[in-house]
Amino acid sequence: MIESEHVIQCQAIQWIRQNTPYVCYAVPNGGSRGRRQGAALKAEGVLAGIPDIHIPALSLFIEMKTTTGKVSPVQKEMHERLRKDGQIVEVCRSVDDVIRVVMIEMAPSVPTRQPLKKVTP
Image (tube, rainbow, N blue to C red; front, side, top):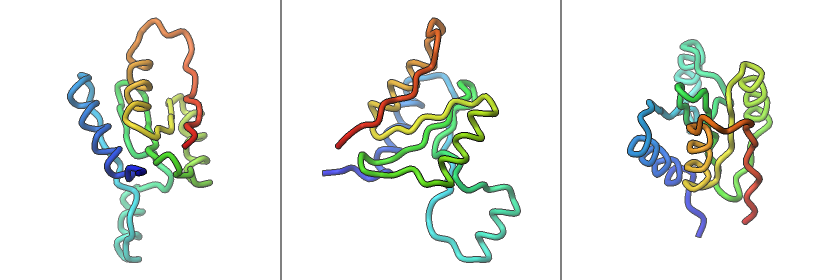
């Protein structure tokens, strides 16, 4: 059974908050909205493609996907923009992926950051 992105993200946020000293928050970009609400959010600064979780102290953005979920072209473009701004962006498909990424970014002796390999179902 494939866990939903919502379940994986809830578990990831819980793990980060219980196991790190860092502030993390979710970016509620998904979901259906009416035209009026969509226009209001856009005017307030909501950007399409922003990853689901942000940990500012680590300059880390995490895009949550299921094992079969695909990163959209808009998300790919935003991920590249964030990387050009010096941010770290990772696509995680499980809580274990999130734990691995956060632990790597917390480790001061890691000489280089390697993107996660794709998880195959």
